[in-house]
Image (cartoon, rainbow, N blue to C red):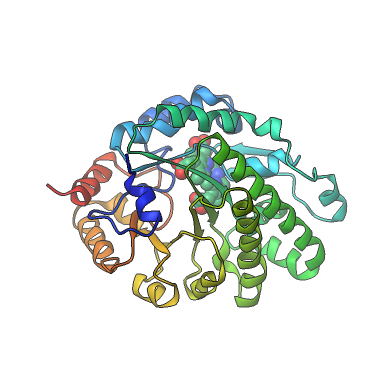
Length: 342
Ligand code: CP3
């Protein structure tokens, strides 16, 4: 059975774009909220295969998306590197911030893979349970985005703590980025060996960097990560999602081995198309807020996305960022009805 999502990643434009949504498993689903309430903490939830498998499958059962994405989080990697990570309800992640060389040296050189074993078990069980037409996506955070949480110890509006750190201590920051690039490549390799058929690298915070820093802390580490991953898995399709980095998109043309680029809400598809070779599929980029509002805003938004990606290039329909908890389920159904046609 050919999977439409994987065919699109191979560059073959599909009659109707395959569709999945970033953060498709999550709080907008009542069945997710119910399941989540049974776990003591978010990390325990991620590390309990029975729960993580169920959360991964919930949006597939309900909506029949073309791809499932492993239920986990980008911050399990710092956890496996020995940094303390927790999630406070309603407040987001909390990590023991890395402030200096001493803190950096406390990290493990390689992730504790036994800590991540439940993630690989989840991947294998999901793979066995998915319908034949549904692909399975593994993921990690990009080195810059993960490092920005490791340094600030929490979410910030502009990742100023990591940017300051990178200017003040470029060598030490570079060592952290290299450790993350190599660990992430190995982490993705293990997800692939457990059954993931494509992988996405989330660089949610790439958009806060000026050009030279973007090249140094986003593009170069992605190259390093993809090169190491492809040495082990030459045929795995890799999707890069550099959020809010529209002006720097052209730099991804030099990253060999990518299959697709995820465009965020603000990216303009024709502009991106002029910057990137046609062999790269595009994924995106409906505004998650239009999906909250529904009605005319949603219908017009979906039409505009379909039109903007109408070229010969392969397109995977997605949002420009994660689906938000307040999104009505009926709006997701309405969007899918339009995408799937009569
Ligand atoms: O896409 C999916 O359905 C798979 C699961 C997934 C989660 N996080 C589950 C999650 C994925 C792919 C992520 C990626 C992730 N995590 C990113 C990159 C994508 C993006 O949204 O920019 C980032 C930056 C994180 C870090 C993170 N995790 C934050 C900042 C937060 C708190 C904010 C929030 O949305 O609550 C989380 C928690 C988190 N990760 C939740 C979920 C479902 C909510 C926690 C809960 O359910 O209790």
